[in-house]
Length: 315
Image (cartoon, rainbow, N blue to C red; front, side, top):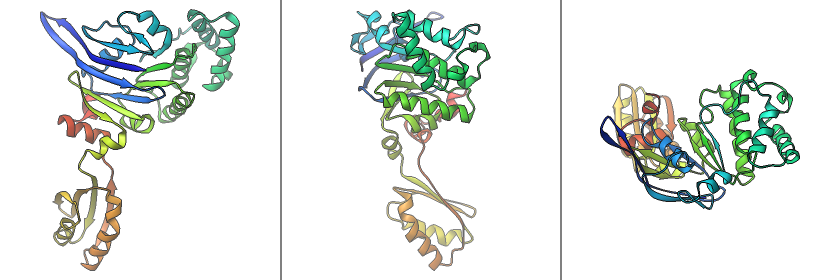
C-alpha cells in the first residue's frame, strides 16, 4: 500500500538548507497497522505530509495506494483517508450533515452518502448524537467523528496523525477499539503517535524516525528484544550475597547494586525467577520485593539514539 524510496524534503530557513527528511524508505503491506514514531522535529510530520500529497518531496519517489505520488497525486487522494491532528468538522454543523457532506465531496450519490453516514454513525457510536452540532461534542466524540469523516469513502489506506492526543484514558481506550475495528475490515492504517503504549497496543509494526532518518523498524516485540533483556529488580536485606547469586544467573548483564536494591538484565526474565528465588531463600537473603520489567519502546529509542523518545516528544 506504501512503497517509498529515497523520500526526502529540504526547507530553506534563514538562508540555510534544512534536511527535514533524508532519503527514507518505507514499505507498508495491505492490511497492516503501522506506527510511525519520533520526537518533535524528527521528520515525522513532514514524511506524513509528503505521503498524503500535502507536500511535494524534494527527492525520491513513492507509490501510495497504487498511485504514483508525483505523477498522480489526485489518484492518491481519492484512495486514501487522512485524519489530521486538528478537528476536521465545523462547530456549527450537525454530525450527520458533516458526514453526508463529506461523502458528497468524494463523489458519492446523495442516497449512498446518507447510507454510508448512517453505517459509520453506528460503527463509531455516534448515532445518538447525530443531530448535535459538532462544537458541542466531547473530545472523544470529535475524534470519532473525524475518523468517520476520514473513511466515509471507504479508503484502502488511512493515515491517522496522533488521533488520541489530549483524550482522557477512557476516550483513548474507546478510540483504540474503533481503530482496531477498522483494521479488522481490511483497512491499511498508518498511524503517528507520541504515546508509546498506543503504538505497543495497536501496531503490527513500528518505524522510528530521528533526524530525518529511519533508525529502527520491526514489530514491537522484536524492537524490544534488541534491548539487553528484561530488567529484574529486587530488594533484599542481604544485597551483597544476593548480588553474588544474581551474577551467576545465566545470561545476566548490567548488574547493579543500589543500597538494598539489586538489578540486572536477562533474556526472558520471568523464566529465571523460580531458580533465583530458591537460591536467595537457601542463602537466607531475605527478599522484600521483586519485579520483572519488560523493555519498553522508550528503552528502544534510548538504545538507538541515546535519548528518550518520551522526554523529547513532549519538549
